[in-house]
Length: 122
Image 1 (cartoon, rainbow, N blue to C red):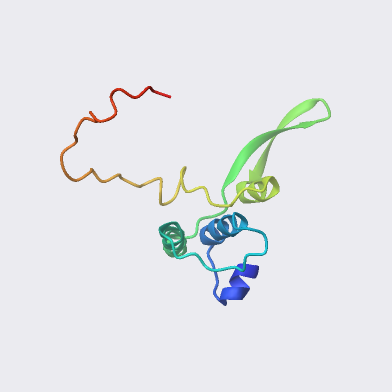
Image 2: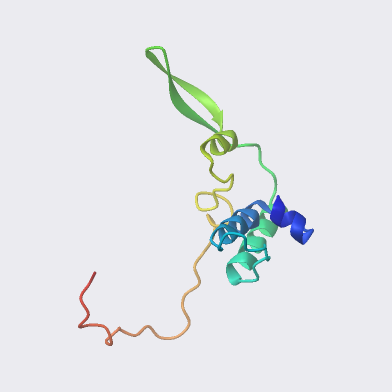
């Protein structure tokens, strides 16, 4: 990966995905600079959490495919399916570290928004 070579550091899967999208949004010919924003640091923290998590067997799901005229259920390695569809291998919303995330209550008192009451709802 070019961004990894230019920075001589190894990026985790989530960070690499984020940094690649971030760089693609830059004007053509812009030299790569590793972002130092909060989103990049979050991606790095998520990669670290994934690296520390126990390794499970690759997830397998049943899908239906049509062979000639019959529909047949087949076991599929989810990671290879994600690769074939061009999706990242991580699905942190349905399982993993986000699945167990508990939102912390906001500090302070909740106030009604009276400043924008007259604005039309779009």
